[in-house]
Length: 275
Image (tube, rainbow, N blue to C red; front, side, top):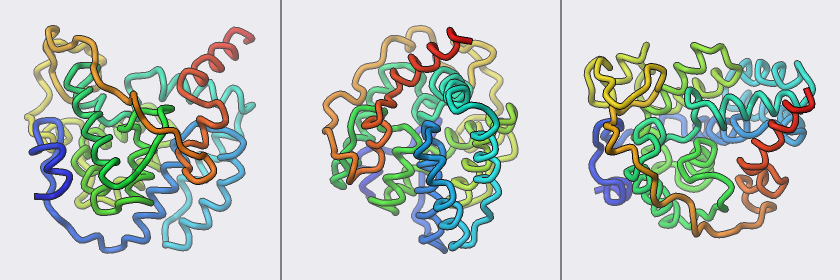
């Protein structure tokens, strides 16, 4: 039994029961995942300054940097404060583009708390220390774990939550958002082709076509049809995470710069009020 299976248990509906596979190009996968971990994060001047380096790293492993070019063009299309406000609206506030993998499978329920604790336990097994600026299922955090800490377990974790990743990809495509190409690159590091549509994702996740909508609003993008009784408050979460030195742990960089989710939302609200 793999470490992931021991911690998370057998894959249930909403996730994929993974089988071992051999990554044909682990260096490419690592570079793509670490690049995506940065590019999917909060847009700031530090990220803009890193884009040439990210582009060069992707080209070195044979990846077309066109998705990076599109993202850079978006970041330069308006004043940075407006870009940051747009990012907060789409990724911190919108349910359609959640970067939290367990939101797609569990929503805001008690079950999600259990899933988040499993993420933290897996990270602890590998000595991966994160602060509490993001939840442990935040896609950039998972990608960094897979790229720099535990490639095999990280890839298995991404594949287990492949339906969440693919629903995010489809939502970005539907809404024409510039991060689409980055998520598509991440999907190329995993086995098999991406599903063509939401029905195919539902089948991947262990469901038939998504005809049942009990407990869901018509626009709700989640995988699971949850009843009202299961939609009570989430327990668990990221409490108790260990502070780290941002100089040695890249995922802490945004927190060190004051860019926690709360700060991002407040900054966006301030920008909107000025407009």
